[in-house]
Length: 269
Ligand code: FPP
Image 1 (tube, rainbow, N blue to C red):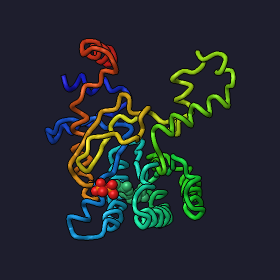
Image 2 (cartoon, rainbow, N blue to C red; image 1 turned 45 degrees about the vertical axis):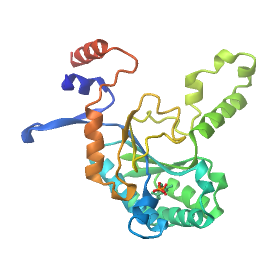
Image 3 (cartoon, rainbow, N blue to C red; image 1 turned 90 degrees about the vertical axis):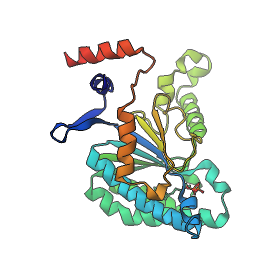
Image 4 (cartoon, protein in one colour; image 1 turned 90 degrees about the horizontal axis):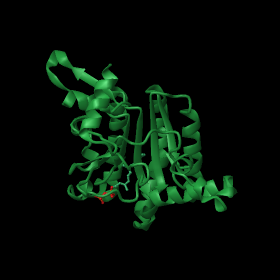
């Protein structure tokens, strides 16, 4: 049955290691992560919370490289939510400085590993230095095609749906008189993630089991995985545990198990 399940995720690559007798894993095409637990990681070590954010950048680097090695095509990370402005001013300021320095420092490595960087969210709220660093990193990595790394910054899922609706009404004012033109596809094409496949696997570290206004629309059929690991401890082995859990899931997209099995059989020819 597991083999059938593997085939049903038609856009997912099945990787097997028959020689080692290891169970086959399905590699998700798009992984989305809420990186939670930086502050608690630091506090438990009697360190300032900001040390946890610095360690969090190291975990981002490790995870990006692990995704490239595993053939994951899209990685979307929630770096700063629309609500994170409510944090103490000093922590917000450290995070902004950290984003700029990470962008400037990592862009060379991203290019060497074939990673294209995109930032989604209302970046107009960021200071001009950060906005320039974002534009520069996006431009310098635009030709890379192994992995698309999307960083959600000043992002919120409700903001995304609202801005997509505003764009739709601006681009097609006839929607006002013919609401049938407001379709899921029309909204989808105007989301910040337009053109990307929806996430196959959502991971949240840090023990909370919430979506927290991340990719609300895009996660409709995504497999959810929660771990108690704090983000700074997340590494290739932790990613593999999430992928192993994903591999066990049967993705039915509203169909029955029998239909899924029949589709898999048909696909095998
Ligand atoms: C959540 O931990 C983490 C954040 C709000 C910031 C995430 C930022 C990074 C991992 C570093 C930079 C990332 C990039 C892409 C350059 P928390 O502070 O909410 O932890 P807590 O729940 O333990 O308080």
